Image (tube, rainbow over all chains, first blue to last red; front, side):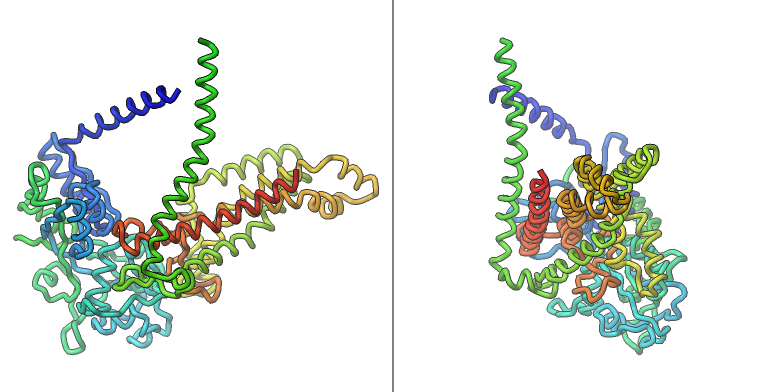
Length: 284
Length: 287
């Protein structure tokens, strides 16, 4: 009776491995939600031009992508933040060698409801709002309303970037944290929806999500500097203070099919797609 | 040959039966192995009673008290809403409703159980959340109350169908005896049937609550997920389940954060184990 079971298992394993072995022409890409649209646009155009190849793109967050790269369940990880030392150490342990390719830039837009009279803030004010030091809109020139802070979940590269560059002002040893009362939402779209329907909410996400239902805030480095719009030109010129690079990570230097795809993303067509998906190209 | 076939089939079924127990044991061992490692870096006391949950900071702060309170508050709210409605509904179906209405109600409740939780969460997000916000004049509608209301919908089918079953299995003679003594229909229900079925009803409630405390998707979408100890039911909360679901993807395998999430899994496991055992005790008392 055990024998039967064993034979069944063996057959099952054989079929599974046979299917798994068939994937030579496919690339699995996983990671940053910010980059999912971009990755998918690349994949579509790439597959149009290379009909034999198959590229699958899924989101989940930068951390999710990097941990799947480490566990070798994806070929390319998309990340909206640098890989952490801890992650590199872990990858080395598992025999994976993360290789970083910068593919685009992204401006992080801070958004409020269009009914909110506040339209510009300094980085200090933003930090105070998101850490919970400023709790009422009237302290920054708005209505007498409690501020509702919206943030992404901790698995998001956007969350990490915003904490490090706005809350902690780039100081890696900073101790500032998001106010414990901050609402953690699981996607940029959820933040966009909540901001659109809530006059006292403030949130942040990649420039690509800005629509007419939310109002973006002009941001200044400090009180003396000018307040800057989150536009492609301002990110490219480095004037807009909250912008970040977007990366692809591969295991070792990309080779074969993976190299073909990475090269495509950096090609002129690839970078045109970057502009079309509202990010900022790294090459002109 | 025939005997041999019988033998094989019998043993195969036996293995299927044992497999469920085997898997539960395996799951628990795995949970314990991964989860207990967190106590190398944080004491059990600080883990259970710590007030701040900042898992990705350096060093991470792993206190799950706000999460426990979040889960308990949402569950309590759901229980308060779903128990009276669920039990009343069961009484109506079992005792009062004419046959036709009974059939329709039963089908409707089964249908309610069939709605996926993510759909309920989505409906809650676009309808309930704005309603809660404007009704209670809150800064945001993503609150424990919204979560409780949606979860009450999810607990109701369990409560109704098991409580109805319990009422149905009260011996006919009890009812006839009550009528013979001149009791009205309502007096019979209130004084005779409900007490007679009480253990089954408690079990129904416990199983309903068990369903609620383990629910993830809907609460993650509508409770706001802010890790603060709630002062009222009208503030955002973060539940144990939502924390695991939201953060497991990010947690680096083998990090403190990763182990802490498994430890949260143990806490959840223990909570729902207690609830299920209580329900089981009541169910057996009935027999």
